Image (cartoon, rainbow, N blue to C red; front, side, top):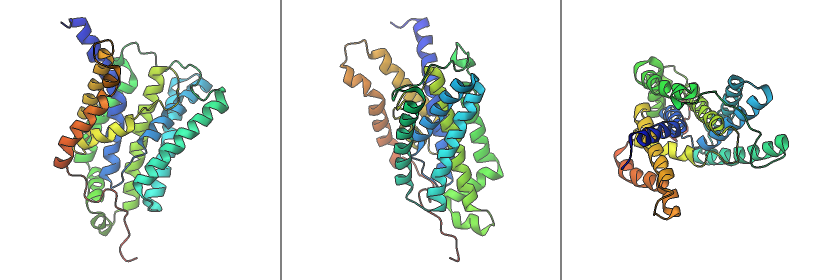
Amino acid sequence: MISGPELLIFFLQVLRISVPYVLTSVGAVFSERGGVINLALEGLLLAGAFGAAVGQHATGSALLGVLCGVACGLAVALLHALLTVSLKADQIVSGIALNILVMGGTRFGLSLLYGSSMNSERIDGFDASLVLLDPLFLFAVASVAAGHYVLFHTPYGLRLRSTGEHAAMVDAAGISVVRMRYSGVLISGVLAALAGVFLAYQQHSFTDNMSAGRGYIAIAAMIIGRWTPVGAALAGVMFAAAESLEMWLQTGFLPSQLVQSMPYIVTLFVLAGFVGRSRAPREVGVPYEKQGK
C-alpha cells in the first residue's frame, strides 16, 4: 500500500522529470507546424546543457548560464534551419547529423575545458529545493499555455500553421515562407535548449550524452499530442510518469533490464496506437521551392 507521503514524492518526481519532455515537445510542435522536421532535438538538449554548465561555471551566475545555454541551442537550431530551409537538405539527415556533431563537440569541449570526456565541474544551478519553485519549471508550464495561445489565437500562429499546410498559399499572400520556417525552428531551439539547461542544473553538472534519448521521446510526445502544445505536454507528462515508475520498480522483483526499458516500451506501444490516427501538417518535411523559379 502506497502511503500519502510516498504518493506526493512520486508526483513531484513526475513533475521534475516531465520538464525536459514538455519544453522539448512544445518546441517540436512549433518547428513541425512550420513544415520542418526537427530530429536535432537531442543535439539541442545537449547544446543547451553544455552551454549552461560552462556559462555558470565561468561566471558564477545561474542566469548567465541560462543565456549561454540558449545561445548554444540557437546556434544549433540556426544551422539546422540553414541546412533544411535555405539549402533544402534532407531534414531527417540534417537532424541526425547535428545530433552526432553536438555529441562529439560537447565531448571534445569537456576534454578541452575540464580534462575529462565524461563530465564538467560541479555547478549550483538555481537554488530551488522544490521543483514547483524552479524558474524553469514555471517557464515550462507557461510555455504550454503561451504556445497554445500563440499557435491558435494570433496572426503569427495562423501563418506558421499555414506554412506547414500549404506553403505556396502563404507565399502568394506575401508572407515569407523562409522566415516563418526559420522562426519555428528557432523557437524549438530555444525551448529544447532550456530543457537541456534544466537537466544540467538538476544534475549540477554536464555529463556526456545526458539527453539520453529525451529528444526522440519528445518527438513521440508531439505526435501523440497531435501537434498541439497542450497535447504534447500531456504526453510528455505520461512519459515522465513511466520513467519515474521505472525508478520505483528498480528495487522490486522484475528484471532490471525490463524495468529500464519501460519508458521506451511505453513509447512504442503508445505510438503504435496513435500514429495512424494523427495527421501531421501536410507539407512537413517538404522543402519549398518558390513559385516562378
